Amino acid sequence: MRRSVFTEDHEAFRTTIREFIAKEVTPYYADWEREGRVPRGLYRKLGALGVFAIQVPEEYGGAGITDFTYQAVIREECGRAGVGFGADTVHTCLVLPYLLEFGDARQKARWLPGFLSGALMTAIAMTEPGTGSDLAGIATRAHLADDGTHYILNGAKTFITGGAQADLVLVVCRTSPHDPDNRRAGLSILCVDTTSEGFGVGRRLDKIGLRAQDTAELSFTDVKVPVDNLLGEEGQAFAYLTHNLVVERLAAAVNACANAAGAIGFATEYVRERHVFGKPVAAFQNTKFVLAECSTEVVAAQALVDRALAAHGLGELTPADAARTKLFCTEVAGRVIDRCLQLHGGYGYMLEYPIARLYADTRVSRIYAGTSEVMKTIIAKDLGL
Image (tube, rainbow, N blue to C red; front, side, top):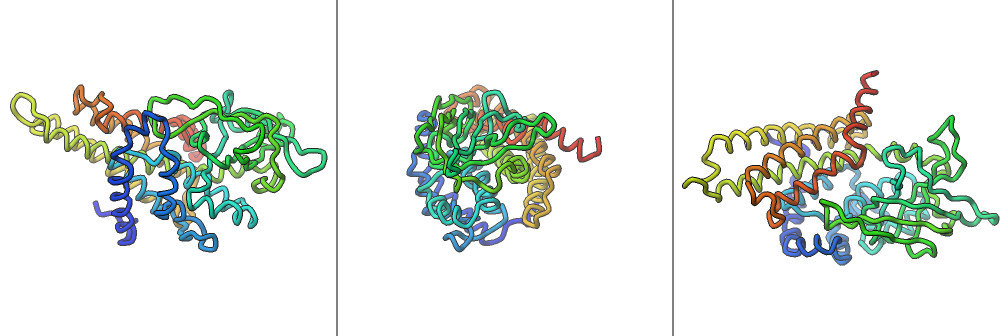
């Protein structure tokens, strides 16, 4: 089906990204997976290409494009090639909306120039060893020093994407005592310079997928955070997190759909080349039916993604519709990629084939940015249930 969300400018950008991936990413990606991170130089190259500047306002050197469609192009091209850019999604799709929406003029002037060049990489720290989807249960704490110039931060975070390479981490913490009658109150976001004394990177977590994307445990021991690094208002973090989860879930849906489409491409190429019983695997009726079913599901998911992209561009994407989009697309991706791996036979289980990488990488999409079960809860609430 013809898609209407992309223009000629998008397609020119797509060509640029595709060529960049072929030259700067694909030849080295297996090495990056073994190392558990992309080289820091890749972020500089993405900055030079303008990838980090797309949604940054013009006054700070960016392109000032407010919709998500160019990010969708990037995700689609990564899915097509079966690769990723490390923690770039967190940098651009998660952290940037917080800085733009809740940062003051001085904070933007201080951080955005480095942000768009790749000289300053960012991460966001929400999840804790004992707190996942229940953000109201965050235990990391910060209190204002007696002289009022800085906060003193203590606690630990886990599953922090990009945490090992970040220069600035947005830390969600409790700045006032826990209130049993209002568990969502008292949370704030502090922007922590990772060179601060008391900041520590713990284990780099060994994941089954997304192996070129560093994920780490972080610790904070009496870290002094200037009051100027408070993002937005003290005590309002829960509302901020709820606001920006819409974008995070849209990004997850786009990425899942892109990976599913990429899997179909890899499977189609494989079954045409692989011969069994004297003929291509593509010649068997089962192969044709499986890929036809997969294609139909991905086209349906893509239509939902495109509607969500259009709604987001108009400022009309609701939390419930973002949840529906993420739920549907991530579940479709899981089914489609599994079937495409099956068509590869034993080779589909070998990491030298991109389908194996997509299989492992995509599984987490039903967990991060809110599990499928959380998405169903949001949707049910929207139905009045």
